[in-house]
Amino acid sequence: MVEKLLDKAWPAAFALFLALAALPSLVFLVLVLLGYLPLYPALLAWGVCAAVGGTFSILLGRDLVVMTRLVRALRLAPGTLPSETMLLVPGMRQLGQEAIRLIHAERLSRARQLAIAAEDRALVERLPDPLLKLDEDSKILWRNDSALSAFGGEMAALLRHPDVRDALAEAAEIKVAVRREVVLSVPVARDLDVTMIPVGGPVYMLVNDRTHERALEKMRADFVANASHELRTPLASLIGFIETLRGPAADDPEAQERFLGIMAEQAARMQRVIADLLNLSRIEITEHSPPKELVNLPPLLERIVAGMEPMLKANDSRLEVEVPADLPKVPADADQLTQVFVNLLDNALKYGKRGGVIKLTASVAPDTRFEPGGVAISVADDGIGIPREHIPRLTERFYRVDKGRSRAIGGTGLGLAIVKHVVNRHRGRLLVESEAGKGSVFTIWLPGRGG
Image (cartoon, rainbow, N blue to C red; front, side):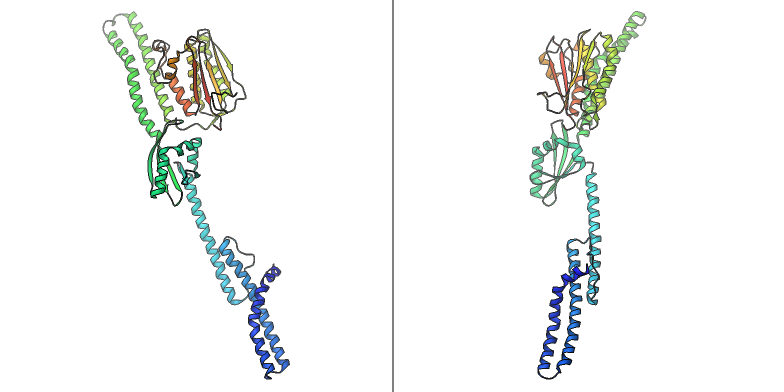
């Protein structure tokens, strides 16, 4: 290391030697030529001066190389010191010590800045609200974890929204924060508050998802409206029967028994309606947030089929199951999927032929009706079928093709509405195929883990 250092120091040392020894040598030469100094004493004196100047030049040249490295480290890499920091010339030694102190101070300052930047980055990463850093062309430069989990594959639809693009352009132009209310309609409706914050060149987009709050408000209004509408008839029946039992049928045991049976049916119907309304409202509140847990479908469908056996026996119906054991796992809510397939199988039992055949099939085979990579599960019956004009409205709340039969078999008119909203939450699709008198096929398509 010392040899390498001296190799690099010799050009500076030679220059210093020339600067230090040139004038004394010239003076000695003039004095000898003019006869003021004898030759040999002059040569001896000149040799001593040259030796001292050469030694000092080497030491000073070496220290200059060390100082150069210290200054370069301060400029380029204050986190690391050169391997050689010892300075030999006294004046240079103090200067080197100050340079080392400056490097240490710069190192501490940079470490503090990095720590503060890391804390700020961690804080931004852990923000509950989505935050994105965009350039002027709406390209994502950075996004936090909340943005990724909240939007995922829907990020492009958000950034293409006209209101978002207008807010970004306005914020970039006027250099102040711009706020917009944005409604996304696909794949599910979402109410968002978007704030564009320009910071120099890039613009930060802060998104506050108000879907949950708006859904709660809508849920309250819809629940009151639907409950008051659907419960009005059974409640009026109950009131009428109570008045009859208190009056004309007060002493008629047969009428009392018959009326109490009807009242129990009406009360049970009201209970089912309220339970389905509450369940539907809970599903709608979380509809904007797709499930992330991976679910293995074959065991889930096997449990559902086992639970349907008593009803199949009571109806003398047969259930044919074709579900491959190697179906890929899909992101899903197991409880909600259970509710979907129980509803579809229950409908197949209610509206299929007594003693008929119900088919439950699942497949990952390519199907041109759906995007590739998902799983399609179908429930088919051989019942009365559904007239074509009714199919588009099947998933509306309380819509019934045959109102009398639906109420007679205990339907609330909410089953397929629940199915639709669960499928929407899973970012899937519901396909209904039916003809009057030829049965119906309900197909649920669920995207794979990359969907």
